[in-house]
Length: 119
Image 1 (tube, rainbow, N blue to C red):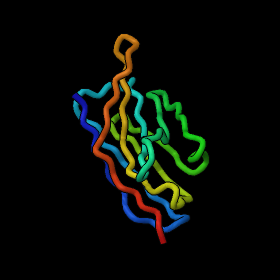
Image 2: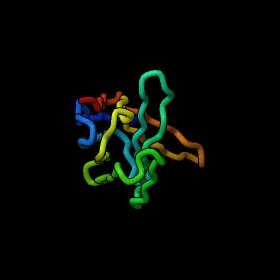
Image 3: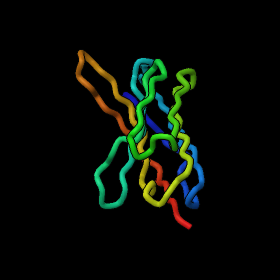
Image 4: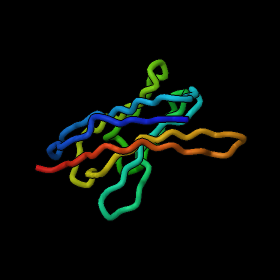
């Protein structure tokens, strides 16, 4: 099994920065794709960023240039550096892990960490 625990959320003013961390434990494979998703009040959950074991990162258009995802496979930790935050970034942020077994994707989620951008 996989456990994902997020940390680093909180209240930040517009224009500010936050760094989210996600500690993964259990059966973690280096080939797993790690990522972050978010869900704002009244909206559907959406993918924010993902990163493969080779370091290839993908970003949603609405965070491109502002957020940076990284991973440390030695400690099974994935990070999300968020800069130039705006009120539209207010959401619960979830750490995700995607694993393919026989070409079938299996997704794991953390409990989420709240990010609130407000003055």
